[in-house]
Length: 76
Image (cartoon, rainbow, N blue to C red):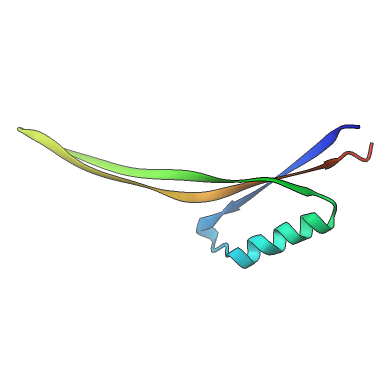
């Protein structure tokens, strides 16, 4: 028997809450899916300024979305 996989993407800029994530996890687990992983995907911003005698810059990263993977045995 083979496994099938489902990937759910949560875009964190859309106001996703931990309650919303928990409801999704519960929904798929009740449908027979097993949680495989929750992976945070990061995005970064940066800027640099050049001067005659050198330069300056700044940068930061943040979690922009989550990739949640589920698996279950195929019904085929």
